[in-house]
Amino acid sequence: MDRKHWKVFGRIFRKKSREPLVNRYASRRKSVFAETYDPENDDEDEGARAIFPKTDEQRARLCDSVKNILLFRSLDKEQMNEVLDAMFEKIVQAKDYIIKQGDDGDNFYVIESGIYNAYVGEDQKHIHTYDNRGSFGELALLYNMPRAATIQAETDGKLWAMDRQTFRRILLKSAFRKRKMYEALLDAVPMLKALQNYERMNLADALIPQTYTKGDRIIKQGDAADGMYFIEDGKVSIRIQQDAGEVEISNLEKGGYFGELALVTHRPRAASAYAVDNVKVAFLDVDAFERLLGPCMNIMKRNIGDYETQLVKIFGSKNNITDIR
Image (cartoon, rainbow, N blue to C red; front, top):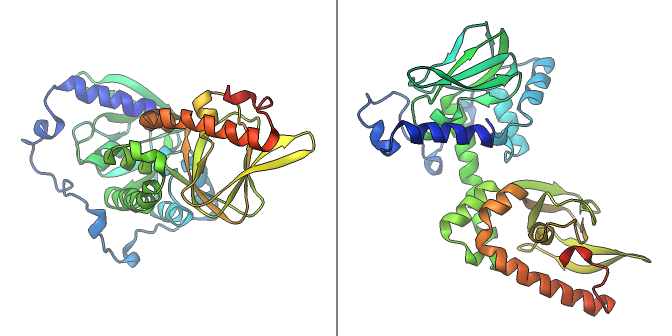
């Protein structure tokens, strides 16, 4: 499910009642699925993982179906393999109900093929159609809530499903581990001192791990900006193209960050960035940047002045840096 449809369901919840969600469902019979999950105390034996054997052809189809699912973007290779192992194929026929509003959440679903309609309310108002792509069913699993909508197949199709316990263990434990991993990194970035603790936690959740090998170009001068980077490990060389070739203007290490200037100024990249050695970075896309780093904007704008000062020292002027004006 993409950001747009998360917002749709959020509006539905809010419209249904002004009462807090926790209170609204407090009178329901306690569900067998309503237990809480504590990722910090999850010592589950790795051998207990759910594994559904697949042919190479099935695995290839599943990889193609999940590659653009927002929930999985921050998973590393090992975690993604665990996701692929844990998903099982579900064949559906036209008019089948996949989930019903108000029921307990049992599975999370990724669409391989078929058309599916989402309905809400007592009058089952149609709110969305999934056409051979997308995913659904995560809200009830993430937030211990009954199903927010009914999903019915309009055509025959195929789904990939993951049971609730496996979904929560992989996704929530992954988010917990990532947050803990990035806490120290974000605490070491002076600019982020302007953020409250909960804002830093939200930032940690939004970061996407990326790796580069020695000599890789991470960003290219003149390209449109898609996000910024925090260095987790390794060194990064920042270079500007001149008539005689590229000239290094700075060298960044763990705790450093780059790529923010083009986002602040809404201009193309002012410089290129290269991996000096093997580099691990945490990437923050432009949407998350605008949503989460508002309190740091003044600091980043002040950094433009520091950047210009560096250029004057190196080149004697800043006339060729058009995107920071």
